[in-house]
Structure formats: structure tokens, C-alpha cells
Image 1 (cartoon, rainbow, N blue to C red):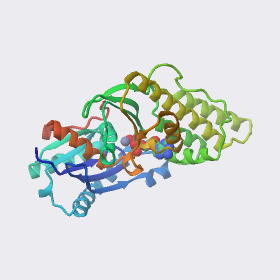
Image 2: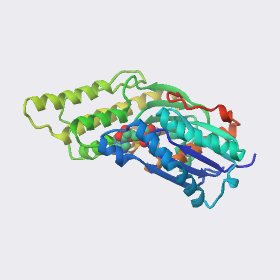
Image 3: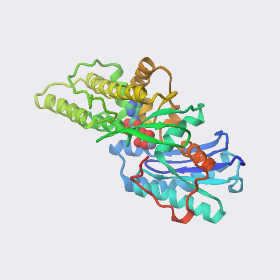
Length: 330
Ligand code: KG4
Ligand code: ZN
């Protein structure tokens, strides 16, 4: 089979991103525009605004991605696009752009599950071995995925309520320390102690997660202190919250490793940038592969890499019938 050149598009949330890779997972260009600064001022993503910014950005980013790869559309063998999960309006910009490109240029199209993308970010920098266990931790998802072989995905655990990244963002908001909350809380926690008596989330033998109780307990701690006119120590609360989130994530990974015996383990998604998570993973689980930050937060290189798996398996989308699916599962 000829090794393809793939151009992939990602617009599922607040990043407009286009990447070009070849059949060896070598990246020829990656251009990403993040709307993070706009939404940092507002304190969260406004879906309608995100969609409008994708519309403004997608064509210049497409042209830049081709220029940086020193290619034209004629060099591209296949197009790929994230079709879910994500914000429906945002997804539709990428999906319709990709469908149009595919139709006008007569190229095959691959639909990519954003979560598969987070996992295949690993292929850009690592030799991934199977059976493999991956923890996906992002703003929208917390899932344990077992892969018996390349291209096979079995969800063996998931959050029953908030995702880990979402709970970071919400606790940061209540403390008024900024958005996105993950990096801010991570930084605050470095100078804090685990002094607040918060509950350990879903501390049981299952592989599922639940972060809403810990989030509410953190809110209550901050609010009760405020009502009593007491100072809340942001560093200590950040540290107490983070210790419990990370310890829970590693506990569940440990359980999954014992049950499934993978030969390699990874952590992917935006929260994998967390310093305490990296530390505990190394101490307790041994070798865990984690993508570089540029590939762990939303980007199109990971979508291209995931599309390569589908290409190898001959899994193409039915062109014009492709639609966005905001609640797509693994
Ligand atoms: O994967 P991602 O870029 O987007 C989604 O698909 O959701 O993940 C974004 C999430 C946000 O919730 C953000 O707060 C979190 O990743 N995050 C972190 C850190 N850096 C980003 N969470 C904890 N610690 C960090 N250092
Ligand atoms: Zn993501």
C-alpha cells in the first residue's frame, strides 16, 4: 500500500488546527490558532463565538499549513477531520470545510474521533506497543482505554460526572484564579500543602471516576471560609484538591494495569501536562509515555496520526454524508 500524505483538520472546541503528516507519522506542518486568550477573559468557552472564530481562521490556516509543508492540495492523498465529540457548531466548521475540500479535489475523507486522536498523539513521538492501556484526561473526558492492538479501543472506565480537567477549571473559577484552571492550579499547588480535609473521589475497586463531589467540597470549603470572613489559602486548597485528583487517577490506572496486564501504559489529553500527575505516574507506575504539551492539548497532528490508522485499515468516510456528532463515544 502506498504511504499517504494526510491533511487533517481539528475544530472541536477552541483551537483551529490543521496538520500535514506522511505515512511514517512524520509531521510536515502543524498550524494552530488558539482562542484561549479570548476565553480566558470571559472565564470559559462561548460556543457561538468559538464557531465564528473558526470560520475566520480556517482558510488562512489551511493555506499556511500547505505553505509550511511546501505542498499544494495536489500533493495530499487524503483528508481527515474531527467529527466528534465536541461543540456541534465548532465541529461543523471543520467537517464542512473538509467535505468541500474532498469533493472539489476528488480526495478520500476520513472521519476521526477526537478521543482516538488524543491517543494517537503518542505515535508522533513514540513507538506504541500493544496491548496498551491509555488514560485520556482532558477538559471533556476522563476515560481508561484498553487497546489489544492498533486500531482497537475498549473503554474500561470513565467519569460518571465531571471530567478531571473540567473540575480543575471549575475550582479555579470559584477561587477566581483564571482560565483554563489546570495550569493555574498546578502552579499554585507547587507552593502549597495538603492541609484541607477534602474527600477522596470514588475511592473504590471500580475503574470509574467521579470528580463532582470533590469539586463541591472544594467550593464549600472556599464559601464557608468566605462567610466566616476567613482567608482561604489558595496554594493549600489547590494542593489538597490536586493531590486527590491525581492520586485517584493513578489509583485507577494501577487497578486497570493489574486487571489487563498491558505491555505499555500512557496518559494523554490536556491534563497529562500536570506536573503532579507526571511525578506520581513515574513513582508508582514506572514507565508511562506522555505526549509533549504541543501534542497533548488539542491539535490537528494527533487527528492526522489517528487518520493514518483508519487509512491503513481502509476505513473511509462516506464523503458528503459525514456529519458532526457532538456526543461521539469511543
Ligand atoms: O485536551 P484538551 O486541550 O482539550 C479538551 O479536549 O478538553 O484539555 C484541556 C484541559 C483543560 O481543562 C485544562 O484545564 C487542562 O486540560 N489542563 C491541565 C493542565 N494543563 C491543561 N490540567 C491540570 N494540570 C495542567 N498542567
Ligand atoms: Zn481534546
